[in-house]
Image (cartoon, rainbow, N blue to C red; front, side, top):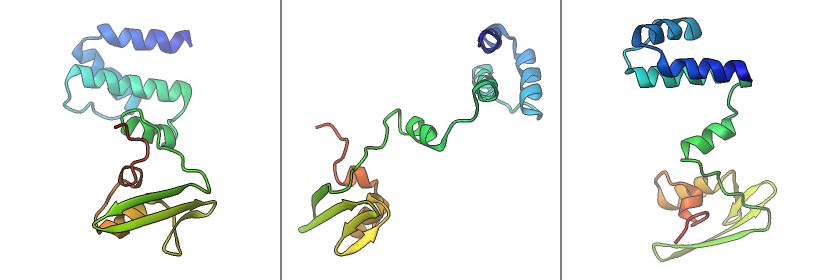
Length: 131
């Protein structure tokens, strides 16, 4: 672990030309036209990826969502939402989400069906939001 820490620490003081050369080493391609700070971040990401392995898709989603993990809806949970005068009543099962007798793979699929536009299912049903 000390080796990766040393490599990351060395990036902090590295001048622009050295960063571009380091990029070439770790990515095996010409460095893009980016400011030094972004080059450092890209190189640090690749060094950590090599040391610890690639990020799982689940972790990438959490990071992309600003650090909030998607809320879990367990089988048997009932979600009710009013939308344009209609009551949307969904039940979570082991095989998916059931709405109007049809099973959907996700809450987002139901929200899209109800509204006709792309929606985050958890957001549509108010899951994980703080009021």
